[in-house]
Length: 231
Image 1: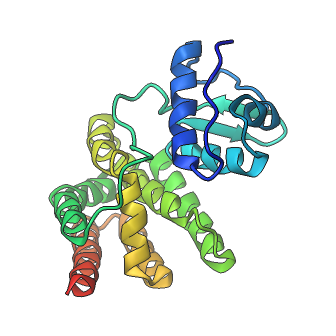
Image 2 (image 1 turned 90 degrees about the horizontal axis):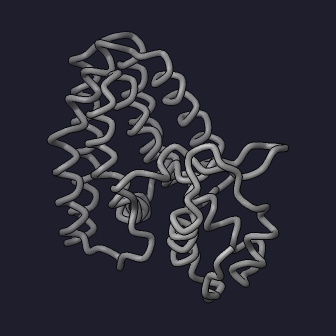
């Protein structure tokens, strides 16, 4: 295998980017097995916890897949052209509001479609992400922001239109670190969870207008919080 330059231990974002480059270098595709966590840490000359953090970040983006008792595999999103930039600089409040306003033009319609179609696989993932988020709030898990991204993607998937899922991905995945900053500034994980749960309930019961309005209300509330912190 080709060698990969060593990375500073605290730059898990750089490490995540290097893993993506490694997948391309090795020609690995969805479902292919990666080396063990320990072997990857040795390859990149980092501590195992640092390697795990980088891989968990990629797992949240669907680039790798941890299979309990089996190993680490290439995920479904590894071949996407649009992925998060793990080393982008911290955005300012104006940029975050702009991102949220772009999402506001798309996500309410996706939530409405999800309530109309109620694709079983999408709803299952939606419920799984809500359950995982609830556990992460209790434990103080720093990867909650990735789960929140997965929730919005699952709502889109419940609409059953793969192209629309890709469109949402092109926004939330490439701006994944911005989403992390939004959650940090929002500061109320319980409130955020409650709004997500309300959207999910509207989708589950098949109420398109309520799902649309819940998505609007959620994004409007986040914009309001970010703007208030900007002042």
